[in-house]
Amino acid sequence: MAKAKTQFICQNCGTVHNRWAGKCDGCGEWNTIVEEDPMGGIGSGPGKTPKKGRPVTLTSLSGEIEEAPRIPTGMGELDRATGGGFVRGSAVLIGGDPGIGKSTLLMQAAAALSRKGHRVIYVSGEEAVAQVRLRAQRLHAADTEVLLAAETNVEDILATISEGKRPDLVIIDSIQTLWSDTADSAPGTVTQVRTGVQAMIRFAKQTGATMVLVGHVTKDGQIAGPRVVEHMVDAVLYFEGDRGHHYRILRTVKNRFGPTDEIGVFEMSDKGLREVANPSELFLGERNANSPGAAVFAGMEGTRPVLVEVQALVAPTTLGTPRRAVVGWDSSRLAMILAVLEAHCGVRLGQHDVYLNVAGGYRISEPAADMAIASALVSSLAGLALPADCVYFGEVSLSGAVRAVSHTAQRLKEAEKLGFSSAVLPAASSELPKGTTGKWNEVENLPDLVARIAGSRLKARSEEAGD
Image (tube, rainbow, N blue to C red; front, side, top):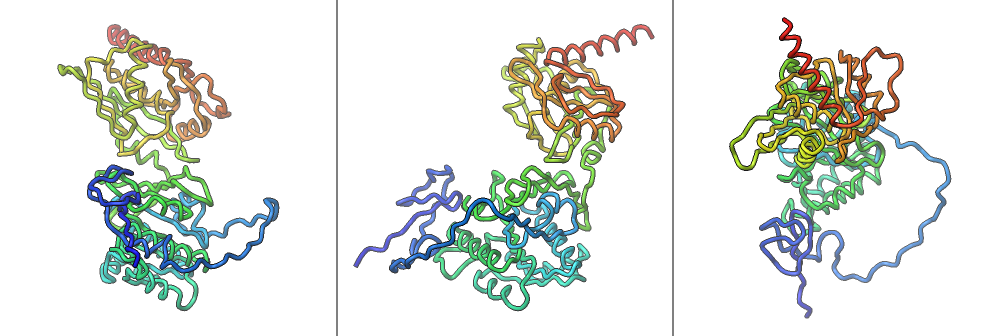
């Protein structure tokens, strides 16, 4: 009799090992390798003779294209992030930190769709029915026709949602709690998660129902479980936010039926999530215009311009190695800006601690923030406040040149709408808005920007001496 084979699979990344080890070779995590039976789950079977395949119909690339039918939720920010609403027959994966508001968002979306006459089923694997009802009462969703169940077995869930009329939306909270009789492993393992997700996606494709899956995240912010799950679904959304602030951001990282650079902004309150139609006012609400080291950056999130304040503090230090602390931006990018300022602009920061913060807990990822960061650093070092009615954007190269960025017109229009009458932008910028009354100051390199700030400081000193 042949010896039964076993596999050792990492529960963090899904890497298969021949024998047990304390550390995974794939992701480097410790104590995540678990023995599993390869005869159960996806990609394995009891050794039966493979069934002969049947030929499928081949077609050409040309032909009629049907737009994916969508179900608008009525929540503008959620529809923006998904590209116009949930696509019928699609599978959407939503991840986020514990307590960030994933269940609250989905409960509000389920209630909004139910009020429009759609059949919505909410399956909770983490909370009892009474707990979900308490949340629904707090969110004023208890009066809707949302169908509720508390179950974790995949086969039982499929049998339940298959009865009666086809549901328009099915919410599974969460995929880490699902377990199937076909997989011989504990709930939450790679095999169980993969099996449960594949079964739910198969149901969505066959029936045309939209399947929304909630996923836990690791300490690194990635959705827990095998990365193949993110490849299996049609859209992946991350619900982000800082516990110290009320705002939440729904960010799209994958979308087969829409853009992947859109965000939806919400504000958390005791009555649930409130949509924020103008995020710039939220991030600039507590701004002190007369403090040195503060610059307003005109950024872009997909097709939406966002204005956010960048704060810098440069302080002398007696330590041998100056401290560099960054919140909301890339620390490597800050090191590059500091090097360019010292090499090409004569700004000496080697004996200073540098602290950088993006106000409101917002996180900037685009390189267009280089000019705003550099302006805030020079302003803090010089002890001079920048103009309160000015915004900054532009990418800085290692040679000190300022490169043009995209969506210049949208950034300037948003700034003018919020009362900013001037801007510092790259000289090579195109698509300048027409018919505006703003003062656009174009700079070619970073030394020009530093000279402009230093010149304003000398002008301020001369005015004080004249008084």
